[in-house]
Image (tube, rainbow, N blue to C red; front, side, top):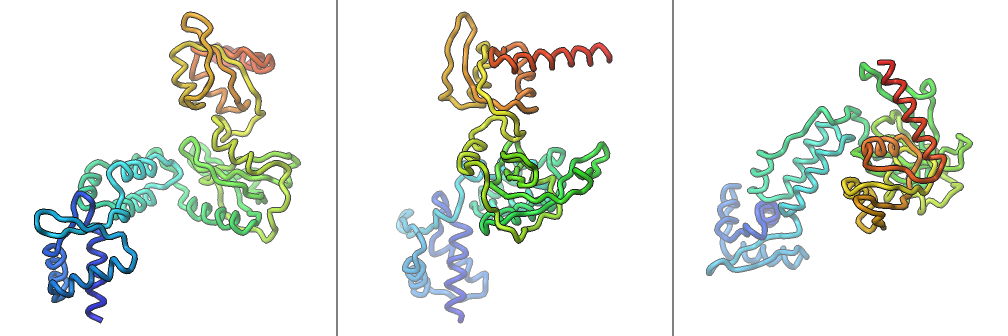
Length: 329
């Protein structure tokens, strides 16, 4: 029994304390085992190291001077990997502050000791940007299970009023939908689903942090009146898809300052044509949705819609309504 405990203790120590930049040797392992009340010697330690390798662990052995050193590279995140994961957790609004702290601690446990000290000084979670629905994780779990089992699901959907109180859609109606996928977009997590009772033959989007009483339905997902794979691909690549709207191709004229914004939204392979001095042209897929119009108004006079004509007309009407609102203030 003692030999088994020593073997597990060695493995745990190497996993938690070693890295490519900080491998551990016999002396460090020995000191750790002595601190745990064990009585190792060089022979038993050598045998345990051999067993760890034979068990399939990617234990890297190297020499520092005349001493052998060991580390398990696959068990730790390097600096860049840990930074990306932690920043993603912090920026995700749908993760509550408490859950964000828990996830960050898990990531930090998969870094070496120096990384732990470095990040503890650097990490700040801005609670103002976080949502407070502690059941979001539960809803994600239910959605994932429904997807894996090919089942429909039920939930209630709500908004928040000026006092942060929940205002339920359609008098606490219980939605029944066929889940398609989950998408992380605009710092929120969305369920993409088909509502078979809506009379609409296309998908809908629901913010997962606005879902409540989420449960799996006994009914199978069944037939969906559109291509699921195409839908998933479109949502993963679309700029404005978190608010479903009428999908169209539009033509735009814009100046140089707007070009980087368009590249950021559509990717650097977007075809752009130069029209003249500081004037450029692009044909882009968009959705006639609140997100699209917010993007257009954000660009102000740096961009102009050329076509289709109904989109140009709608833009003009929105500008007229805004002028009337300003006059009334």
